[in-house]
Image 1 (tube, rainbow, N blue to C red):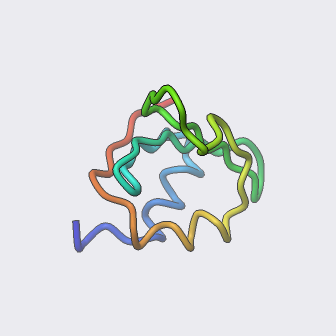
Image 2: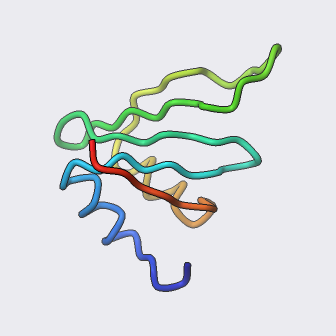
Length: 77
């Protein structure tokens, strides 16, 4: 995964891809909504979890999270 850069992730999101990734042992789905507006959805189901199910985040937030993303997969929306 060393060859996978943030620029590539950003281009794939810009191209309409949905990105699945693991962050802190939880699986998420990342989708671009508009310019600088992304949807981050928690896919890992837990009975009692302090993590919100859906969030709207900015590109800056995605960029800060990128170094910690694991098991990155994508599919065309």
